[in-house]
Image 1 (cartoon, rainbow over the protein chains, first blue to last red):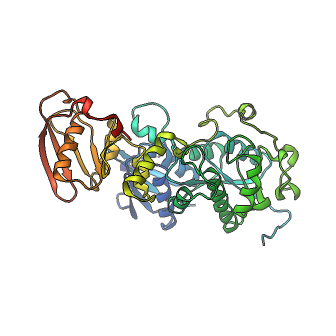
Image 2 (cartoon, rainbow over the protein chains, first blue to last red):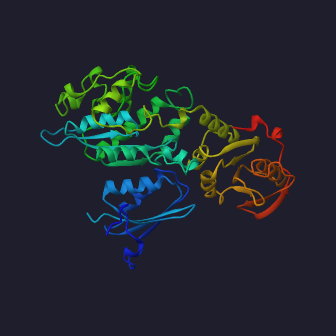
Image 3 (cartoon, chains in turn brown, purple):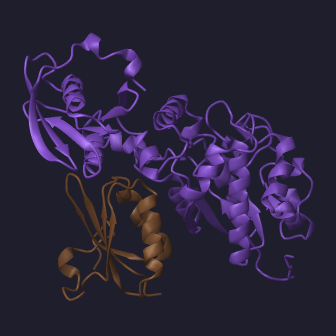
Length: 93
Length: 352
């Protein structure tokens, strides 16, 4: 079930579904985090989860936009004062 | 040689800057039932909303990449391509020279259209579109340069400029009937009125900077900082981190061999945090303070002097004693008690 902001609650992620890859996009300004995700996604299987660390607040807008464009799901987003973490599931299509 | 096939869905690749013109050019093709996908090239010099977002992270203004946003509004896919390394040669050795600042606009256009042509061939697309308008830009969009871009890029007559096509010779997509030339446009000159009217007609109310001018190389202050970097290093090379950091903070160069990058507010300080692993850095632990990085090789005496400069930008600027925490990637952490420099001792000519 999706929350109204289009994201899942952490508790709804299958606890067995560990991220297949972790991407460090800290210090990168958009669109570099999107470019890195774009590249990483090509190497993942459908349904795999990518965990991405970012620091650019613009990623809160751009990563969901890019994911909608390509049908990938953002399962969860964690924000702290200095860091944003995305859990992205590669499109099953 | 590029082969053509009749009766198939024609596909165009559109150079999407995030500005209004490329958005309208793409819309014009979608209205003619052309399949369009967007390309956006990341040079490192793009001034998207994020640079200001870092500085003003509490503002309500959307912190978005305009090219992505435009593509989503148009309902097309956008492919963002990292050309940072290949683009260096364009910035450093432009064949057609610079514009008013360090903007190599004509070389840049040729380069990007060539990249688009390569992508078109690799992905079995038919032609390329751009949002160029004759006379809109003083250099890269002059009529005499339009054939140069088409020829030098190798795109030749597969390069269509829908917004000003009627002012140019018919291209292959027009001659072959893939697109209806009568439904293209004859915009020219610096006026933005035709674009605004077309945007209104399509119900487009929210768009980025009027003419897609998103490159910081057109900015005099940024150009000054890039020249300063090149002079200090004795060569014209750069890395991505260098050109990103030129967008962030105050840059103060007390001596030729080092400079300070001082955060101007919380968003910049947070962003600079990410560079502490690579640069000697400092902040006050006795007063509210920005984070400052030192770019360059410095002695212990120079670090102490930097501490006095940075203390000037803390809430303790009038205090007799400010405690600074210094962190060096190679030698660890230590503290210094310093007296902030007087305002008049932070010389205006140090500001880059």
